[in-house]
Length: 474
Ligand code: FAD
Ligand code: AMP
Image 1 (tube, rainbow, N blue to C red):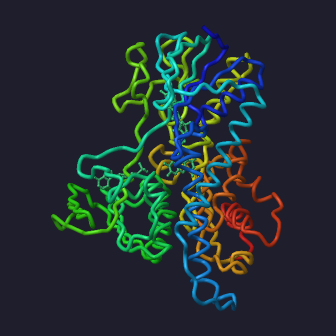
Image 2: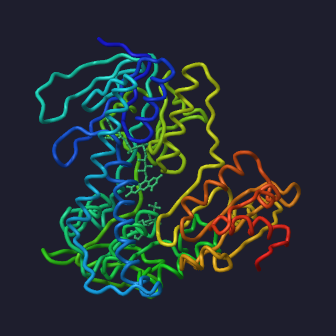
Image 3: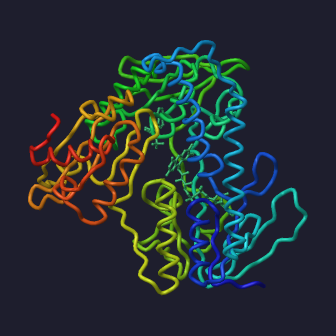
């Protein structure tokens, strides 16, 4: 039986990054992965690279180009006619990006001498793992041993009884990344991150999109001012967002889907050509043998871990979507890096307070730290400064005036407690906010930092000045 210092189960952004970091630190490491792609080939990269972050951003970028060319070119004096979209080409482009990146991980594994073990892992105890080969191979089951086991098996789309995915008319996020034509009428259940991003893709390409969300508030996790600005903007783009709309059933023939839902007015129905079920994701521990080995799961099926991602079973860790915390790729990766370093005897730490969140609608929504509502609930006194994109030269030059930056700082010591951005390129602008918080910076630190002109980052600078009531351009 082959024995490693570390065996990682799952090669998503949690698992593959952990395996590489372990190898860099001189540990012998294998990564077990069961993913088989559409071509029937084993693939690394997990949800994120195969059916998550990367393919969704490829389609968001393509659809943004299409929409922008169609609707914003005229403002720049550019006249274009006969603009069409070739959906199959757009989807093939996405597939090519996925293949390039997933093959890139395989090259990184070779470079770092990480053994890629293909097949499905099942824990036998805290030292041994059985690997069942993929169905199309005739290999025997094997067992590997490890001094440390890291579970990074991620998550799968949550299923709900009223809307069973048939992968024809009713799809989950994976199916929604592979439509071969623009649906005329598209329904989406769930106005969370995934529902809004995928709804935006097809709306930009011409679908009439209706999003049904059970909760009464739009993006309840997001700062209220930012959520209100985003809701207004998305509605103006044509997304029909119905809040307080709980889906109770669906019926489909071979052509269309009828969705029943309840809202304050009572029972409602709509009919669509395709329906995306985007009601969240659930931890993936099926067939993994965790319960049989005595690993504790919480009520929702997440593996229970401490602040260092240790499970209750000695030398077994779990990271990423399969444990508590935000379901974000960078959170999974950084948890894994911290564990790899601790196993190698280094002080690996993970700062949960500075994990950035991004929603890739247009404009984008990004934030780090606390919202005003959280500060109020925790009775923390704060000062706030905000600044609209409209008042910056670069946003005007770009024609991207819809946006704002809002900074929340501790009223006693000016330390930044949260930064919330709605606007073009918020996904990139948020990095400055994360660094400020990582270094325990103050609003004054940001205000004294020289920002290049003309850039969108000047809105961050001005929001920091606004905390002290000394904006220049407003
Ligand atoms: P995963 O990426 O799910 O990887 C787990 C891996 O484990 C899989 O490859 C699986 O095959 C393997 N596995 C499971 N069980 C076994 C077993 N028993 N044996 C062997 N292998 C096993 N996050 C962001 O940060 N930014 C985004 O823009 C973003 N966009 C998203 C868009 C969509 C449409 C979706 C669905 C998700 C998106 N996410 C995004 C979330 C992100 O994909 C996840 O947070 C991230 O992939 C979690 O990483 P992970 O390593 O924990 O798990
Ligand atoms: P997220 O967890 O961010 O992916 O968002 C999923 C969203 O789906 C949440 O906001 C849920 O409130 C919503 N949701 C879950 N079940 C239903 C349902 N039956 N009808 C409408 N919305 C739902």
